[in-house]
Amino acid sequence: MSTTYPPPPPFTWPQITPRQLLPVFPPPEPLPAPPLPSPPRKPMFNAPYTLSTHIFPAAHLRTTNFVSVTPPPPSNATKEERRARAEQTIQRLKDVRGSIEPRGSRQVLWNCANRYMKQGLDGTRAECVTLFFAHANGFPKEIWEPTLQYLLCSPAASVIDEVWTWESVQHGDACLINGDKIGAVFDWTDNARDILNFLIYYLPSVASSAPLPTHLARLPPDESEYRKSNPFRNRTLLAIGHSYGGCTSALAALTHPKLFSSLVLIDPVIVKPAGPLIDKTEHDNRLALGLVLGAILRGDTCDTREDAERRMLASIPRRQNQAWNTRSEAADRLVLGALLRRETWSSREEALQILRQSPFFGAWDPAVLRIYLECGTYDTIDPTSGKPIIRLKMPGMQEAVVFNETHTECEVYHRLPTLDEKIELRWVVPGKPGAGEFGPPGATRERVWLRPKNASNIRIPNAGHLIAQEAPQALARDIQEFMERRYMAPRAHL
Image 1 (cartoon, rainbow, N blue to C red):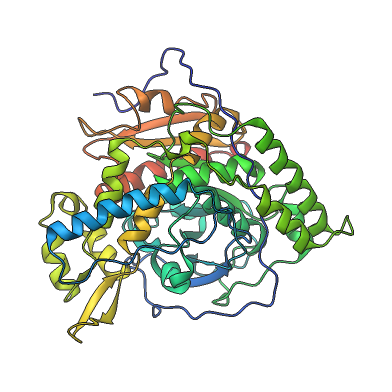
Image 2: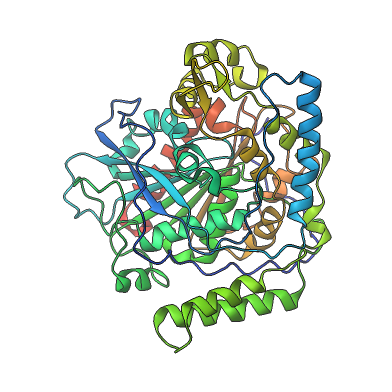
């Protein structure tokens, strides 16, 4: 089997009008300072990088309204009762996605990120690389450490000054911080906006070994304004996204391309559209209001921010197009699987023994499963028995909510051919025989050539969709080789 996909014959897809993203900006200050929910820890590897964890607010104005989640079934429910409740919840999730309730909110949410900083830096190496990793649905920010274990001990580490591993608002420690502020509806565009909010307003100007506060400080306004239309002054950013994180990282790069040097997309959920998503009038209205709000934030108009936010939220469609609510049986199975997922064990040792017997978790690299249980769970007390247990930081309900969104993946597919050709694009996709595709057979071959210039791809042997979980060493090797070619060649390639 070839390790790469050759260019496919010409192909087409239904033309759509992607939605205009809401503007990207942080919430008004001052804000409360939530504590880190997990204690400090050392990374699982011995490379000369220092780990710290940081909190910062997510982008203000959420695209979806808050809808309360369905309560879980009682702990003594039978298997049949749990499945019946899960199937009812699937229908409710579909209903609230297509609800006629007003959309959008001013809810303040928080993101978390791990920072792995090379020791001994003085902040003067602007030509070196900052890595940004965005996880797949259901995984904490630490899921990348087995990959980093190999990458940061490779020759490519000579040009890696700093690594940031991202956590979406309903994942890992971010989920523990946001708690019941996270509802039953989520739009993937908000994860792209949250990523941009971090890159524009919170990512420090230089990579330095100096420690950073747990709560990242907002950058000076002139620096954030500069980043909206220019590359980083003192950074070269390589973004690496898997699945959900790949789709939303690509959307972030489509929105603010000058911030990105390269993209490594690990089997991203980017799917050929089946039909139209929204009409052109809705798109134009949101674009116009976005320009108004941007002018207010710059101080170019006498209108108030509150009034502009109200108008922006009112512009979000009150009823979703029917295509947004159309799901495949495979997607419904993902939602059902998340809702039925076990969330508690008596200990991490018990969880490890049980999960490694599962065909799903048993396919993972052992180091990935261990870090998943170490950092994807927390210690708590069973409310019924009063005994100590561990519980997943991200409930299965929230994993299902993320799976329930199916239109951003089509919008990114439609827009990806327009991605700035200066951004080198590397696709890392499954090479396991019989591995599923996002679409019919041949869909992956078409997808990796959507933006043919300055693009390449590789198929990872014996890995399915969960490449970062099943083959972290092979993934690290490919990132290493990509970086050696892209960033360790003569400076003319930078």
